[in-house]
Image 1 (tube, rainbow, N blue to C red):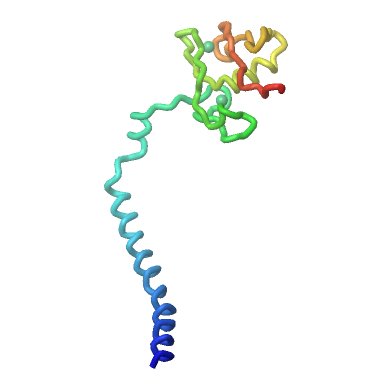
Image 2: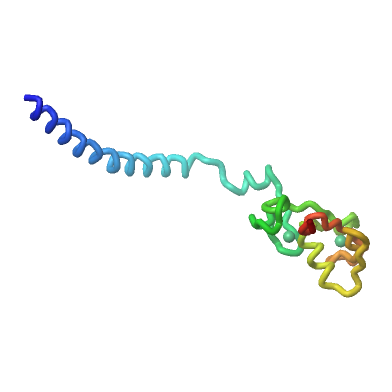
Length: 133
Ligand SMILES: [Zn+2]
Ligand SMILES: [Zn+2]
């Protein structure tokens, strides 16, 4: 008898996993169609939580990149001080932009140049640079 009981257990274990996938598949489909009609529109969410695009890379957040260190994945952190412009940038992007210009001057870890949109003077700290040990 002991041997038979053991065989029955094995048989049950094999058949048990057969039914959940088919049930959960249709169940998830139902949930998706219900949520699709009842969730608020994504546009409304965006207006409540406004993120500003960078005027140079046109992305809201920097990519996740080890080289960017703590700046990785962050939003815009510099805004042009000219109130008529008020363009937002990533200090990383603005720093790269300024470095590509021959008119830019650097003093210690601050770059002095001009806003790419309104040409007003801007000063960007480039503390995200790789530190030399
Ligand atoms: Zn940027
Ligand atoms: Zn500007």
